[in-house]
Image 1 (spheres, one colour):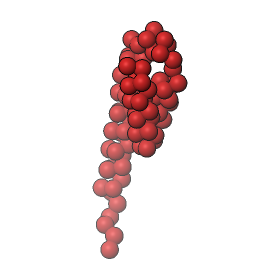
Image 2 (cartoon, helix red, strand yellow; image 1 turned 135 degrees about the horizontal axis):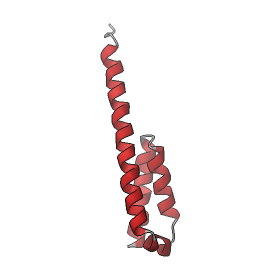
Image 3 (tube, helix red, strand yellow; image 1 turned 90 degrees about the horizontal axis):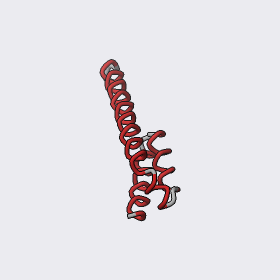
Image 4 (tube, one colour; image 1 turned 135 degrees about the vertical axis):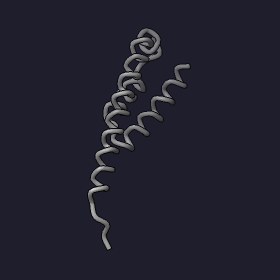
Length: 79
């Protein structure tokens, strides 16, 4: 299970970094570096933190996309 967590954290870190989701990137990086014992001991806390960080990240991405769409709607077509 430890390797599965590390592999998932690595994939999450890469995906988050590719869209500029700094908080999620940092969280996933911390997960990757944790020992099996630390992961086991802090599992409940890490699960709550993941939920919080992912919720905040999604809200920020939604805000970004809404603002970007708003700006594009105000830009007159070129041509």
